Every structure is written in structure tokens, then in C-alpha cells.
Length: 490
Image 1: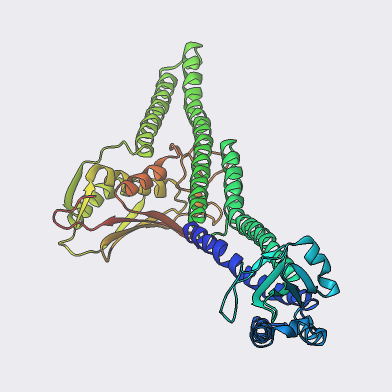
Image 2: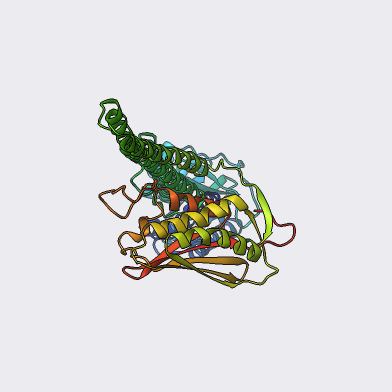
């Protein structure tokens, strides 16, 4: 759920939830206050019942008013007054009769009311309605009807209803609703704010902690925030950034380790021939080579080692360019079948001198073209073949060169019958300066960069190179080159 939708729902909840809760509270509170109200007004348990009771009370007062018109002298009859007083008592009401300015009838329970509240004067309220307008004095509801006694004296009959319990219950009900409203709003707002803010703040705090750890260089952890919103997307972006930073630092560390290893290997491979050269030069200087034959032998050895050093430097220079992808490729579109025939014919001459037989098998259509740097492709093939010859342990060596067409690329296989490579060493043969012989025996020569350079060149041609080997039977080196169509580029 998105943060926007979450906030919208929380706003709706802030409106709807308090209303629902107030309705529920009002529903149950009504029963409590009606019970309190019934102590003063027995039998009144619903609004409809209250209206019915009021109507009955008003009907009694209407009868009293009619009596005042027909038989005003009845208001001086105590039995008549007691009769209606008894009926009004159930409505928490009572009658007061005034003749001129003298109270001639008043129930005992109304005495304090008369003393504390002055009654309206004669003629102040004259209404013909069956439900006369009322006035409330300190919780009293007063109904007045004026008439004349038979002796022409001014008379007034009052029906007084004590509404203070009703007002008190209503005020308590209103106060309870106001307090409930405040409490409900505080609880609802606090709860929703805690839930919504918690779902936002907690993940943000995790992101803040993660950012601080990244800032301090600690990348060995995982940012895991299970949230399907904007914060979840942000955390995924942070996690991706952390992974890339870690990969970058790991790669940098590996480069640094490789650089150290490279310097070590270069130092070792340069020191061996230089030490040899130095030894032979000292031999000549010290007169150890005291015959023309020895001097010639020493000079030839010095020359051979110098050539090895020069070749090592050339290979290092080439590999560094390949490693930095700064070696320019001079691409040409060539017919691969014709190219292979010419190249292998040239190489076969040298292989015969080393008692190695070359077998060539071409399964590529004669009209197939590839886009390659001719000199660099030759370097790849020469490096692989020289490596095969170098480690040949058979008296009659055989190298099978097979070219196949696979979909949109050419698959080259150079297979020898040499000593093979063990499974634990096979994954490392394309590493720079790697030699299968852990003692780094340099008797067979070489810089240890031949296969590493070959693989880099093939990768620069958007191809792949790998090896398969069976120890004791031989090794196969595979590499691919894309087939070229007219107008193709790498």
C-alpha cells in the first residue's frame, strides 16, 4: 500500500471512526441517563413515552382551564384541588391557586418554590392554545391560566413542573458526550498517527542506520525492509546501491591483489633470465670463458635470455593494453576457410621440425566470413599451438585443428595428445603467469601470459574461450568467433 493511500485512509479513519464510536457511546449512555431520569419521572423510558406523558399532563391542565371557565368556584374546593393534585403528582407537577394577590392553595412541596420564585402577575400570560407557552425559572416549567371567580375576584391557576432532573440529566449527557468526543478524538488520532507514522518512521530509521553504516564503509549487511510502498522502493534502491558499492570495492580489492601478484610474477620472471645473463657476463669478465668455444656459448646464452626478456616485456605490454581495453583492433572481413588454410600451412612447416603432426578438419561453408583483426587472430592460434607443443610429452605429437559452424558463430577446437591438465588446475590456465607446475620451472620457457592474452583477444572480438582436458590423454582449447554478414561490426 502506497504512503499516499495510507495517509488518505488515515484521514478518512479520523473522520469515520470517531463518529461511529460516538454513536455507540451515545446509544449506551442513553440507557444510563434514562434510568437516572426515571427516578424522577417513572414510566418514561423513551422519547415517545415522554411525549405521551407530556400530552397527558397538558390534557389535565386543559381540563382545569375548562373548569375555570365553567365553575371557577371549584378552585376553592380542596377535594377538587386534591383530586387534580394527586393526578399531577405522577408527572412531578403540582397546582397553585391564587385569588387576587393571595395564594389560597399550594401543596407543601411547592412552598419553597413560591417563596424563592415570584409568580407571574394576573394577565401576564393569556393563551388560548391547548399547549401554552411556558417559562422556566431555575429548573421550573410554569403554566398559567387566569380567570375570574364568581365574586369577580382575579384568579390564577398555575401548573408547575419541576424539570430540574431532566435538565440535570440532559446536561450530564451533553457533558459526557463532550468528554467522550475529546477522548475518542485523542485515542483515534493517537492510534492512527502511531500506526501510520510507525509504518513510515521505522523503515526510515532503518534506512538512516543503513546509510550511516555505508558511510562508515560497512557494506557486509543486507537492507531488508518488507514494505510495498515508496519506502520499500527506496530501500530496494539503497540495497542495490550497497550491492554495487560492495561489488565495486571487492573488484577494486581484487584488482589490487592482482596488481600485487602481477608485480611479484613480473619480478620473478624477469629476475631469472637477468640473473642468468649477469652470471654469464661475470663469467666472461672473470675469464671463466677462456676459449673461443666457451665465449661463443656464453654469448649465445646471453642472447637467448635477452630475447626471452624482450618477449616477456612485449607480452606484458600487450596484456596491459588488452586488460585496459586499449588495444586497437584493425578489423577485416575475411573468408575464414581460406585464411585457415594459409595460416596452418605456414605453421605446419615449423611443427614438422618439432615432430608434431597437424590434422585440419574444416566443417565450415566456403562462403563463410568473419570480422576479425587478422594479426591478433593469428596470435591466438599461435599461442595455443605453442602452448600445446611446449607441454607435449609424446614422442610423436598430434594436434587436431577442427573448425565447425554453429548457428551464428564459428567454433574453433585445437586438440592435442599431450599430458593433459588435472581438474583442479584446469580453471586457472587462462590466468596470467599461471603455470601448471607449482615449482615454476622455467626450463620450458614462456612468460605465462600466452593463454591469458589469447583469451583477452577473443573476448575483444565478442567471443568466448574455454578448455577441456583429460589428464594423460590431452587437452582441447575452444574459442568462438561470430559469423559476419555484410555491414556487420563488433
